[in-house]
Each structure stands twice: as structure tokens, then as C-alpha cells.
Length: 250
Length: 201
Image 1: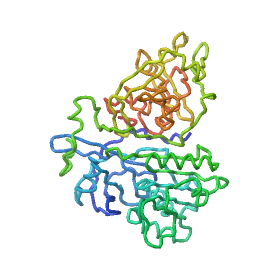
Image 2: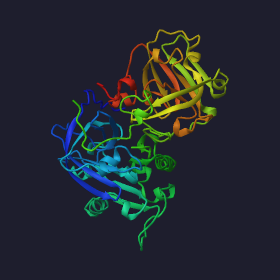
Image 3: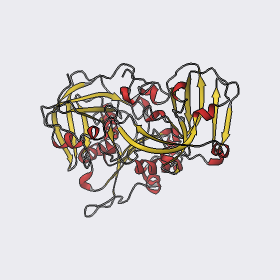
Image 4: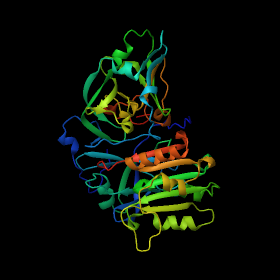
């Protein structure tokens, strides 16, 4: 087991919001300038802390979307129904505001170019965020590592990073990107239109003989289905790394 | 002096729940799932629970023998390091005190080990005197695999990653050594009331 421990205390720091990008109707990217950011690895997350005027505080974790090579830290946040922190980040936050956070956190669900591949990334909804950091890192480091992304969204409009993914996929040595749209499809859609299942993965994922490393991120039922299907396809359980989230307040 | 987030007011769950929420936590009604890899599915006929390490004689129970041990009902609040807390959860399981009855040892710490190569470290004193169980049922039903079934450790006074899912045994030791998440920067002890989330907290 790798013992890439973070041993110093993770102190709270302030970042300045320099830009807000609407990714989809419910998802926004927060671009931050953090003077003493210690650096991160693709797949890690941060804790964000909000403080009201009377001292009341709320904390949540958000995946980092930017590559380690990027000058600014990007968090991509989905507004959850009744989400205490996400509704503030998606609805209230403005450029020029300061945001308190600490990190980077997590050392298992990470990918660095030197870890090699090939990479199988399987995302459900906003589970794309830490996987996008990996694709951005792969691009920025020009890693000669094959990558395939299987990305499940409810509709065409809800695909996060859609244009950037198209651009990455069309580049030389770009990742193979497979979308599936589970609720509605645009006219003329010829791609998958169902939840990710074993048959789909057998068609588009690396065969286990390529010894891929798989990263799965999405809601719990999605992660359970995909991880079990990959193990059935012959992926060793130790090659399948998972990160889960649920719509539980956020 | 804390930074004030312009325009933030919050939902104030903490105020509604009095003093039952540790700092930085929020309440959930559902039961979120977190784990690092695929959910293991060990058949019950292959399952066993062991006490090994610095013991005069290791012990092992089959699923059947484990079920024949005295079972306790536990009603408790649980707190996950990812910030959610759930109040009044109900469990059934075997107290660690029961499992350690008659075990001769001079251990100070424990490494709990699980299917899927998961481990977590705890001081032994945090597992005894009615503070910890190996739980096999949740909310009146057999524990679901994604929540750690057939059996998980239950140490509710520490962050919930210490309550190792798919637990298969305890290794008794004379020193503390990081388990899985602890080796990735999470706190060695993990007291939610002191907000010991990460190393150095």
C-alpha cells in the first residue's frame, strides 16, 4: 500500500473567487486564486467552510476539477435540492468574494501520470469532476497513457464539460469518450441511452488484459453497479477505485 | 478571527438538534455509502471472525458460531468524516467485550482488518467497556453489503471510517500503526467532538 501521507496540519486558507463558469443549469465551476496553495494531485478534494455573520459555520467536501498544472484551483459544484453549502456556492457566490477552504485531502482516489495506465474513468453526473482533473492532468503532462471515459448524464444539456471533452477527444491521443444519456436524448442521438451496465462496459471499457486502472465516481447505486460489473468482467478488485456521493444535503 | 462568507446564513441544523451534532457536521436522513473499492461479497459459509496478534491463543468464529454469541441492541448517533451525521441509528451485534472474554493478551492497540484489504487502527481501550461492537444488523435487518454486511465494526464515538465495513477480525498489537485511511492523511484517532479529521487536527 502506498503511504503517501499528508502529515502536516491542513490549515484553513482563503481563496479569491476570480471567475464563475456555468457548466449546466445546475452546475457551476468556481475558479479560485489561492496565494499559498500547496499543490494537489488529480482526484483529491478540499473542504469548504462557510461562516455566517453570527459565527454559524457549515462545511462540505468538493472535488478539485483543475489539473495540478493549472494556475488556478477550480471546484465544480452541483446545486443540490435544499443544499446548504452548494446553493450558496452556485447561487450566491460572486467574483471578488473570498472562500475559505483547506486541502488537498485524499490520497487513494488519485491518478498521477507516473502511475501509468491505461485509465478507465466511469462517471455518473457530477462524479465527472475528479475524473476531469485526471483527464486535464493527462493532457497537461502529455502522458502517453491510454484513457477511456464512460460518462452517464441524464440529458445532453446536463453533460458537464461537454465542449472540453469533445475537444480533448478529438485531439491526437485524446481519450475515447463514450456518453450515455439516461433520461432524454437529442433528436438523432445514436449513442447509448440507458444506465451503464456490464454489456456497455464490455463494449467500450478496456479489456482486463490491458491491466487498466479504473476510477469510478458517482452516486452510490451507480458506483455499486459499475464496480460489480467491472469485477465480473475480470478487473481485479484492487484495480477498481471508487468515490461515492449521495444527494444527502450538500 | 473567522472569515465571514458574504451573504451566507445557513440552515441551522445544529441549532435545531441542540448539542448532538459535533463541530462541522450536518444531519442526514438517508444513509450515505463511502468506500474505496468494489463491495466484497463473501459467502457466509466462508466468513469467519478472528482475534489474532499478541494473544496467548488466537480465536475464530464461523458465521454460525458468531450468531450464537450474546447479541446486543445499540441505539446511537454516527458521524462520518465527510461531514454527515445520522441520529438514533439502531444496530444489533456482538460486543467486543464478549469477543475478548477469556482472551489473554497485553495489547494496547488494535488493527481491525476487513475483506478488500481495508484496515483501521484504534486504541484497545476504545473498543472495550461497552464502547464497540461487531454489528450484523441495522434497523432490524441483516446489514446490507454496501453498508458493510455481513458484519462491520461499530465504534460510534469515533468518526465512522473507524467502524470498518466487512470486518473479519482484530489484530491485537502493542503499538499504534496507521490503517488504510490513516496512511492517506486521515487522523490516527478520529474524535468527532475534537474534529480530528486529518493528521495534525
